Length: 77
Image 1 (cartoon, one colour):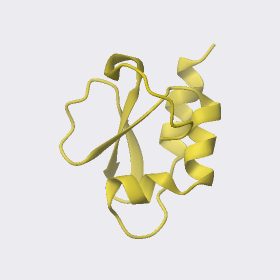
Image 2 (cartoon, helix red, strand yellow; image 1 turned 180 degrees about the vertical axis):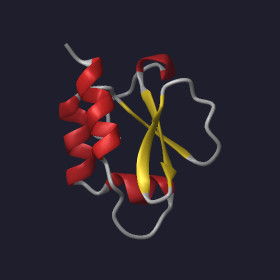
Image 3 (cartoon, rainbow, N blue to C red; image 1 turned 120 degrees about the vertical axis):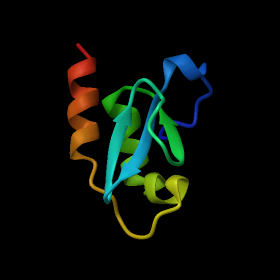
């Protein structure tokens, strides 16, 4: 979503919307529509700047991405 590069599904992080916030779904088991992004802060920042999460998840208004940013920040060394 962020950098728009193709990658294997296993290399991407699934994102779902839960109560107005973007939630990471590393196991891919949470219910609802999902969107995929590379688990890198640069890719996440591009997706946020482009307002891609509300569009991809088909929800109105902006979404909180703090939990997602925290998860991605811990995953990258």
